[in-house]
Length: 67
Image 1 (cartoon, rainbow, N blue to C red):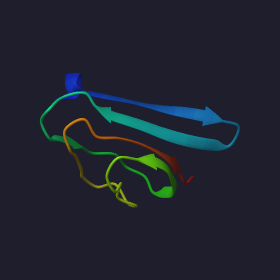
Image 2 (cartoon, helix red, strand yellow):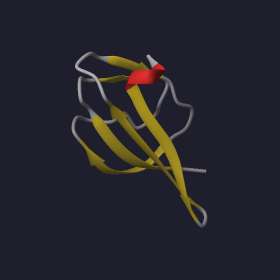
Image 3 (spheres, rainbow, N blue to C red):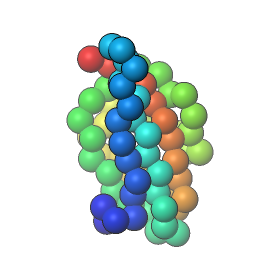
Image 4 (cartoon, rainbow, N blue to C red):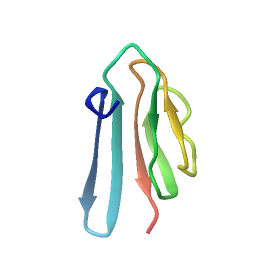
């Protein structure tokens, strides 16, 4: 659920970064529209195209998004 996932977008000029963390010991579903330009850090493999991302327990990642 949304209260168990911490997520935000950080902007730096023309660049956008998505930071996501699952703050629970259960899998969480996450739906985000956008394409990943590069993965900066990840616990498990982040999908390159977000239609539905399943976050493992305590999973976290940061990706740069394309325009």
